[in-house]
Amino acid sequence: MHWPPLLIGVVLVVGVSFLWTQAIGAAWAPTPMRKVRRMLSMAKVNSKDIVYDLGSGDGRILITAVREFGARSVGIEADPLRLIFSRILIKLLRLGGQARVIWGNFYNKKLSEATVITVFLFGSTNARLKEKFERELKPRTRIVSYHWPFEGWSPVEADEEEEVYLYQIGKGPDE
Image (tube, rainbow, N blue to C red; front, side, top):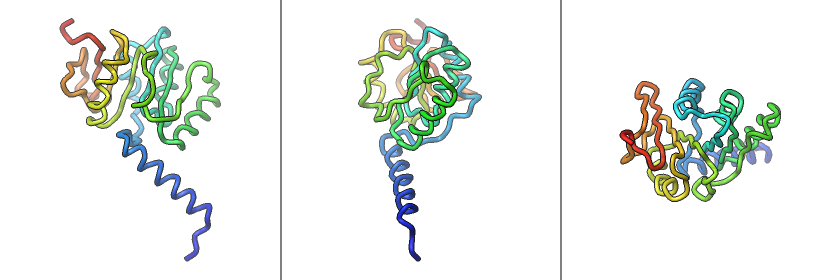
């Protein structure tokens, strides 16, 4: 059987894209929209916020933060295919002045501008991010995680049924 070079190229790009994001701890699984809205409402996102979504995938959290909560948003995405898709979607929705997506590994990007960070990453990835968050984020920055809590941190609010956990830099549940 002879495979056309274009098909081989597409298979390689998709395969490398999938494996790369798995390796850095952010394999893509779209966050259900109900959870997206719960994450953003639990974090009390508003027009003064800059929401960073680590592993922003198709851009659904970025777009919802802008359209429904009035925030500005920044996604960091390592997968070039999802990066292109989300950039096109943001452009088609005319949200370019309020939402943007940066290509790269979020471990290597500055996060200090964020007032809210959203994550739907592996538990081990969250654990690796804790030190970075404590080092780079301003006090009172909110971090909201879907599905995977941050081990060793006490959430300021938790919705166990929805698996959404809210944390705040420099603040525990009793502060």
